[in-house]
Image (cartoon, rainbow, N blue to C red; front, top):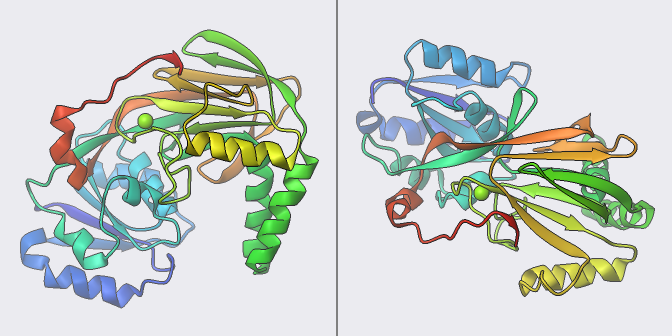
Length: 309
Ligand SMILES: [Mg+2]
């Protein structure tokens, strides 16, 4: 591995940078020569990754949380370069879903010349790529509040309050979903598009979903009361989605377009700048990710079905 670039977010989570650097150095012989780039938060990381890849780097180790990992992955879409993850963020959903160990040393030990690979899918919206989820509705309000709270450093109780406030404020609206060119018109309060089984919450896999199955899931919620949410949660947990008409799950393998009567805010992997109409293109097997799950990927027994499930 002669051409490895380590992209390290020095302010991710609470892992100390010197500990990561030590762990790298201890494995220098096996990793081969590597260069380290520390992110500033000001750069266009996908563009930087593309430029370094063009210079000949073929393995990129993203050290950080989902924000760092997603930005590095975005720069590698459609290329032969390999992505490796050392999860040090507060949110490490991609690493979790790819079976990558949480410990810095253990994660680095996964990286070698012949390490197993999975081909993860990406969701393209305009010229950006998302790897976790895209949503519209209640979740956007919760996320926006959480973002402001992070800036104001408020506590967790405020988060709960925000969730309830957004729940109370939400209203249904008519949404037109074009799923692989098939139109579904629904009254919903949430449209959630997921590429990751964890839906942003590690260890809570509610929907059968994989990072590398060439499709994404669309979950729509229809809720008027808090109790609806409790019911939906139970339905998803018990996989009873067929019974209630409050929750519907669709699979998308090519493209999803979400249209609303009036523009609605959309979040794309936590980015709150977008609104409807929004088009999500599934980029199948977009990035080569080093993952212990790669060993199993040859004998996939997942049944791929299109349309509603
Ligand atoms: Mg998938």
